Length: 484
Image (tube, rainbow, N blue to C red; front, side):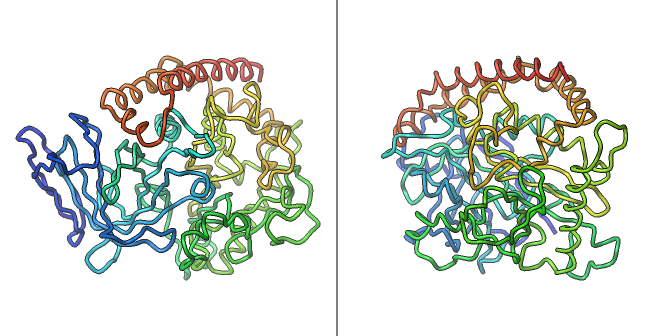
């Protein structure tokens, strides 16, 4: 049973906190503003998170216990016991500013569902910072809004995306800068809302769902628990250790041709660029049954075969029996507007509910994109990645170029694009979204504090570049899609 506590703060702020009965979450009214924070935040209204691991070093795996306190207007509004670990694979190795995964725990270290910032109760959350490497003088996302903007826009399109909140983070007395506090993607009625699939769900109806699959690197799982932190700084081979326990491979290569060599070869073998692997995200690899694996593998293969063999010169389509076309259209639009060069081929989620079709999304990981993206020219589709990059270990799956050969798919895309451009994707709306975030971060001094730790973002110019990019990119897409 869930208790709901209404707490009066500062006599004029009423906050609603929801938590499980045994969740260690304590709204308080004490004011720790006198020398308690690692930096002077002045009158900033951006939430400030303080995490204390009690002298224990944070590891990549497993999570270590810590106390977390959240302050709003320098008033402590929430406490929670958590487990915390580093997260990310490539970003962990490249970035001096680390990201973190956290779980809310009870006294015994068990997960407890907790609400933060009014988000629905859950136990799994992430704290994501922008990628910056000071010694190599590079950074991703100088606006600090690549993730937030993409997710917010996707929600405006009527799709679920991880709820996010700008915060400033302090860990063990050291200021870490501006972060996004976000929901971890997982099966949940308030996140990826699909049926729970038990190992006993084997009949012809229940075995149809729900499933979550992911096209991604293999690093980030639990296979390396106990390794020293230094191991994860250079474990590049772990990104491509596919095996039949955690994944399955498409029967077709990136060009839509049948693959005639065995799967699960060593990392970065000479033919890896041709392969597309699907990771079992839900049920987890250790829980999914052999029969359930066969079902979802067969479903994906049947879809791919139909997509490749349908005659697009006719009015008959069979691939649409397997996919939710509208979700594929929206997934295309968000990745192309945001010029997400990792889109489609990495951090790519899809799910299939019980009795339903394959649905693309939710979206994830937009730090490489927008005005700062490379690899794909500004005036081309990201789905044409393979035309510009040679033998990347993770190339563009054949799905998307093939879909763009279908006049019916392009017609659905055109209809949706025109609808969105008259509403949520109006240029004025996009620019207003950027200004709102930028003004909030700058007026509260968060950008200056972040730059004091991580170096200059050239923030005003970066924001201007983002706005110019959005104007130009959507205008280019207008011209391309009008010809469909």
